[in-house]
Structures are given as structure tokens and as C-alpha cells.
Length: 190
Image (tube, rainbow, N blue to C red):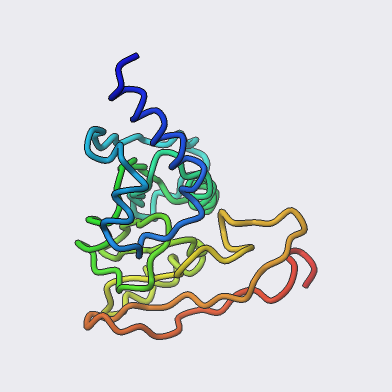
């Protein structure tokens, strides 16, 4: 095994442990140091298996940009599929350029960025909030759920606890406002 291959293997192992624990708001030098392999890997688009019975043909395709090793991102993809959305996953070594391109405000990042119906969706936003966004069609860039709140889709806890969180609407000017509030209890107990 060459030294380069060994370094890449070590870097990938290190990032797989921390991929869901870090946000993408780190300065680029810090992010580059935690993801050495980003200079050698390529983008891999992967259609995610979904039965035709579960896909709702009236819903638009959701393109999810994430790192390959992010388990909670995969759980969010499953949440979206269960809600009827067709989903295409694009594994990237660094999602930051996508966040910058679509206009995710600084400090509002999470572990994955999706694009759907002309909007972006940042983080573990519930599918019902996305359906509401698509139905109402506000003049906006998209929705953000900063960080990874416990109990949000893809971040479920074994005890069903849901940390209170607010999904925010990002206006065309980049300002945010509350769009939906969630949590503060246990799922299935209300």
C-alpha cells in the first residue's frame, strides 16, 4: 500500500467518525485539514433505491448533496423517500461549494444540502415543511435547519426525545424568519 493510499484511508476513516458531528461553518483551512481526501476523490451521483409504490409523481426530485460517510444524512434521505419524494444522492468530499452556490447563510449550515423545486433545503428539515414550502411558493431561496437537533428527521433518538427547533425561511435577500416550530417532547406521546 502506497503512502498516499494509506493517508487517504486514514483520512476517510477519520472523517467517517466525525462527519455527522461537525457543521460546515468551519473556516476552510480547518475543514480542509479534517478532510484530506477532498483533493483526490470525485463526485459520485447515486440514485437511491425507491419502490415505485412509495414515490409520489406529483412531488419534484430532491437532489441531496452530502458526504458519503454521513449516516444521519442517509437517514434524512430515507425520511424524504418515506414522504413520497423521489431522491437522487450526490456524494461529495466537500459540500461547502454547493452551500455557497445556493446561498445558505453563514452560521445556518448543517451536514447536507438539498435542492428541490427551485429551492434549497439545508439540514434535517421535516418533509412536511418542504411540502408546505412547495405548495405556498414564497419568494425565497429556501429553508434552513441549522445544526442537527435531536429528534429532527434523521436525528431521531432511541427514547423518542425531540429537542425544540425552528425551521427558518431564507428570503431572497438572505435574511431568515421562522417558518415552522417543532419539538419539545417525545415523538408519539402527544
